[in-house]
Image 1 (cartoon, one colour):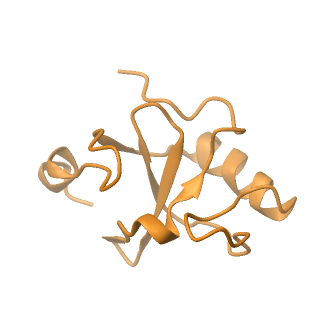
Image 2 (tube, helix red, strand yellow):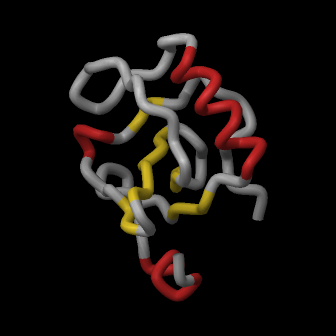
Length: 90
């Protein structure tokens, strides 16, 4: 994903800037998905692992990226408040 585009994207719910999850962060999210711990904004459990994703600055919401396209739909955002280490580091 182009850095210029990433700098423009914000969470549609909180308007926080978004950052790309690194491999370790993505692994933590995917492990929580595999354990059935993460719910989407529409209340359903997420079942599909993420190949790429963006998180809010505070790390409480994660949006998947499909084929390089961010899916910034509130109903599909993952509530990641229970997953540590997703907040932006800079």
